[in-house]
Every structure is written in C-alpha cells, then in structure tokens.
Image (spheres, rainbow, N blue to C red):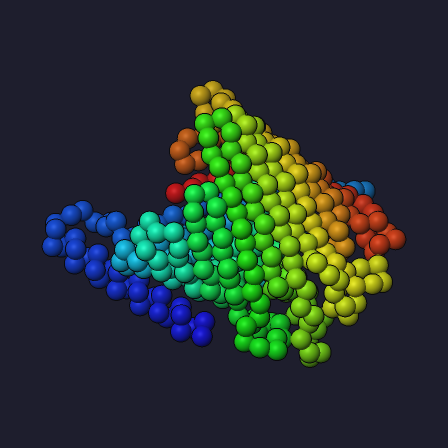
Length: 359
C-alpha cells in the first residue's frame, strides 16, 4: 500500500508539473509557477566532545541536508515530499557504519477545502504526537523518545486557535502486529498570539508508543521471532509561553505503562520510559542582526535501553549573519544513569559550532 501511495504522489507531481508548464506557456509567465514550492536547509557542524576521564576529540562535517517539495494540484489537493541526508554520529569518537543516510522522509497527499476548517492527509508523515519545540539545534530528548514517522492517515479540524487531529497508522515491517492497523491517536492544541504575549498548548495520545523511531529500533531486536510486542500507550504534553522577547518552553513525553522485561529492561524490570524538558530563550538584536540565547534542562526516566542520557544541561547562542545564514554555538553536558541502574555514572561535555543555510 505504501508503494501505491508513493507512486500516486509521483504521478500527481508530474501531472502538476505538466499543468504548470501549460499554464506558463499559455499565459507567457516566467518560469517557477506558483504551483510548486521548494525549501530546504544545509547544516555544517564542528563538534568537540570530551567524555569524563578521557581525552577529547573533534569532528567536522555536514550534519544534515534537507529538501522539501510542495505542489498545489488544485484548490483542494496538494502533495508534499521531504528528502533528508543526515550524519548522526558526528559527535562520536568513531564513525559507525550506517550513521550516514539519505532517504525519503515524508510523502503525503493532502485534501481539503481552500481556507477551510478541515483537511485530510495520507502518506508517510510525522504523527502529531509531541511538538518537540526547542531553540537548540540538537534534537531534544523528548524527540529522541517520541518522534514517530509512519504511513498514516490524519483528519484535522481547526476553529479559531483550537485544532483537533485524529490519526491512525499502519503496521511497520520491523515490528510484528496482530492487524494491518497498528495504532491510532488524537491531539488537541490551542494557540493565541498577541503583540506582547503568546501562548501555545498541546496534548496528544497514541495507542502505541512502540512505533516511535527509537523505541521501534529496540523492540525490533528484542522481540524478533517472539510474537507482537505489547501495545503501550503514550502521552505527550507541551506548553510555550512568550512575553515580549522572552519564551519559556516545557514538554513531557512518556509511556503510560511498562514494557515486558524481555522487550525493554531497566534495572532488572520492565522499563516505562519518559522524557521532559524545560527551556528559557531570549531574542535580541546584536549589531543590528537577530540573535537568540537559550538555556535548557532535559531529563529521561528508565530510558537506558534507548541509549539516552539521564540528564542534559544545554545552552545556545545563535546569530543570524544575513538572510538566510545563521551561526550558532551550542554547549551541553550529558550525565549517564548511575551504575546501580546499569549506567556508567559518568558525564560528557560537548561544544558544537553550526553554520546553517536555510532556503
């Protein structure tokens, strides 16, 4: 079914391109018709890591390249596709095989009335579970636990500042399931923006946290040839408050029950993983250019099987050099779980300088 949808999206893109070309020819307009939008980013990172009681090491390279395409086929129909190259182990001492990958990240078909209150989207997409809002460029620990990208169908409805989304997602070949429908969920969000203040709230539930990317990777190994994994529901909650140039962000993502010991273990029992963050940011001008400074605290619970730290203290200073270039310096310290819980009890400091181009 995935291949059928992706093939359909390609045909729609080709059809839209032909229509755009015909329209341009008929109306004698410049190339680059309004039906297609292209965006993306390129991130160059220089990372220095110093584990506790060990010598430090440095790596420099392209950490991520993203390309997104959005085509408006008609007033009611649009397609989107996202491609990503990422190098996930720039901060590691050794380059691990498979840490560099290029893949189709999203491919969706959206249907709904123009400027209407509802829409339906289907395809490979990120589920509306977790917001993962952060001023840091390192992925927050809430994202490391909860980000879920699966073939799914979602129905969204908006009125004023309130948005409600219902979604269902299909089974993944890496995780056994009793049926073709692996799970379902819902998200409710509210946002309000005024000149001096802003507020954003989000609450989401998923029937199976096992389909988040990192949890899926663990369960695919521990439950191989042993039947379907337990279905453990997940909860995410997010709040962001802006007052003037200051912003406060808080988020929680966690399982609502424990996995079986054979599936995911923590300290001799089944793990019930969770993560949260608290972040404060301030936007200002430096030399006439937009800048941001932020400080954050992140933590996890019973997530040692996911190879996540117990705590992370992190800070960043970012400066927009000129549209669309940004220079940022990020410092962080990860602390591992205690030895009695299966961790090393040690920590590591890291400093990353990132030069980013967005278009």
